[in-house]
Structure formats: structure tokens, C-alpha cells
Amino acid sequence: MTAVNEFMHDAIPARQPEIAVLNVDGGRLMVRGGQSLLGAALMLAAVGLWIMPGSNVSSDVMLMKLALSVTAAGIGISLTHQSKTSKEPEIEIDTVRRELRIVQRSHKGAETLKRMKFSDLDRADVDGSHFTLWGLGDEIIAEVGIKDRRMHRSLKSALLDAGKI
Image 1 (cartoon, one colour):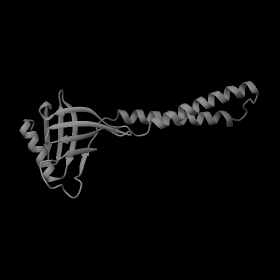
Image 2 (image 1 turned 90 degrees about the vertical axis):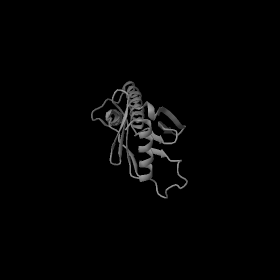
Image 3 (image 1 turned 45 degrees about the vertical axis):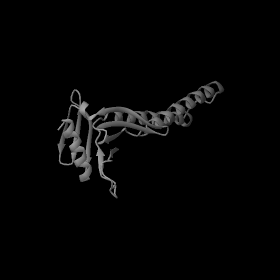
Image 4 (image 1 turned 60 degrees about the vertical axis):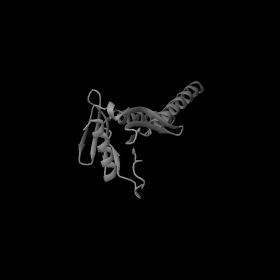
């Protein structure tokens, strides 16, 4: 999610501009997928301990099966719960202050992870309505598509003033 603050104009457009951020990192997806798969397997194993045919029903084995199934089910539920898609950081582009902020929103509130002035960027590439903002060391900070002409013009002029285009 991306937000572009536009304070230079008195009128605010009636509809929200179409803005998108593309994430090129698939590592988080793989970790979340592995967590959900392992969590589901542990929950099935906890149930399988009790419905397995030919299992021993003596009292000492029953206590061990109970402890093992409760532990496996608890870990499985917590892994499945943690594998939910977390909200990705939002990128806020402030053309008045000439800065870029990466903000993580949660139920506790918003936390600014990174704040970067346009002058601190390495470069910015513009391809039609698509902006690619590069940090130091050829690191992609953000890829933003802006369809609103006024916001596109405002961001492009701010990046031109900073000497990044």
C-alpha cells in the first residue's frame, strides 16, 4: 500500500488515485508457506495418535499420548496462526517535505521503519506512470505506479528538483 501526500493544491480529488507497490521479495512467502504446512502436519499428527489402528490403550501410554498430542496441537495451531499474511509495510511519499517513509501499521499503531529524503536516494527511474526509487548500492526502495496526473507531476517535479531523474 502506498500513500502520496499532496498538500500543494487546495482541491483534493474526489476519487482515490490508483497507486500500487510491487514487492519483489518472495522469501516471506516461502517462510509463511512452510509454517502453515508444518502447523497443519502437527495438528494432523496430534489427531492421528488417537485414531491410529492397533494403538495401545494402557494407562502409561495414554498419558504420554495425551501430552504429545496436546503439545503437537498447540505448536501446530501457533504455527498456523503465525503464518497468516502480515501487512506489508506501506510506502508514504511526501512531496512537500521531499521524503519517503516506510511505515508498518499494526493493531498497536503505525511505526516508521525508515525515513529517507529524496536527496538521499541514489536515483529514480520513470517509465510512463511507473516510478522505481533506488537506494544506495542498487537496492530497490519502492516501485510505485501512479495513475493520477497531478500526483504523478508533483512526484516527478520533486524528484527532478532533488536531481534524481
